[in-house]
Image: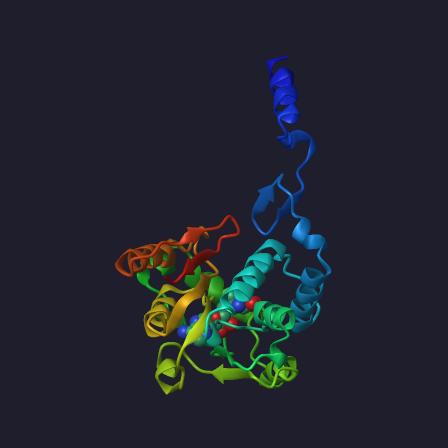
Length: 252
Ligand SMILES: C[S@@+](CC[C@H](N)C(=O)[O-])C[C@H]1O[C@@H](n2cnc3c(N)ncnc32)[C@H](O)[C@@H]1O
C-alpha cells in the first residue's frame, strides 16, 4: 500500500518508476533515464561505422560511444591532433572519425597499439591477483585482439589523416613526433602503459583538450583508477566518473 502511494507520488512528480520503465540496460549500465541519443541518425551512423570496423560484431557499447562522440566533438574546439592508445579493431576511433568527418579535418588521428594484444609482462602483481592477466591471455587465445595489419589498414584507409602506429607503449611514444593534442583516448586495460601514456601526453594536451579513459570505473581495474586519481590531484584536476565505466578529464 505504502509502496503504491509512494510510487504514485513519485510518478506524479515526474520520476520514472523502475518497475514499469527500465529503458536502457546495456554494457553494465541500467537506467530509467532518457537514452534518446540512440535515435539520433548521426549517432546511429557513427555507431554503425564502429561496428563495421569490428567486422559486424556489435559490442553493445552505445552509451560509451555516445560519451566518446561528445568528448571528441567538444575536444575538436581545442587545437591539436587526436590520439588513441589501445585501438584494437578501431571500433571507437572509427565511430569518432565518421562522426567528425575526419577526412575534412586538417589534423592527424594517431592510432597506437601493439596490434598484437596486451603486453603480458606489463601487468602488476595486483592486476595479476585480480585476474587481469588471465583475462588478457584468454582474450588473446580467443582472437579478441586484432593482429591482422591488412585489416587494420583497410579499415582506416578512408581517412588519409588517420595514422596507424604499431608499437608498445611506452617505448613507441618517444618515436612519435607529436605537438599539441586536443583529444586523448586511453584504453589499454593495463595500468603501466596507461600511466606512461598519460605522463607522456599530459603536457601536450591543449587547454580545453579532453582525456577520456575507458576503464576508469571498471571493477577489476582499481589499480588504473587509483593511479588516475592520484595523477589528477597532482595535476590540479578531477576525473568525472561516468556510469559507463569511463573517466573524463577536461584540461584547464
Ligand atoms: C580494449 S582494447 C582497445 C579497444 C578499442 N579502444 C576499441 O575501440 O575497441 C585494448 C588494446 O590495447 C592494446 N594494448 C595493451 N597494452 C598495450 C601497450 N602496452 N602498448 C600498445 N597497445 C597496447 C591491445 O593490443 C588492445 O588492442
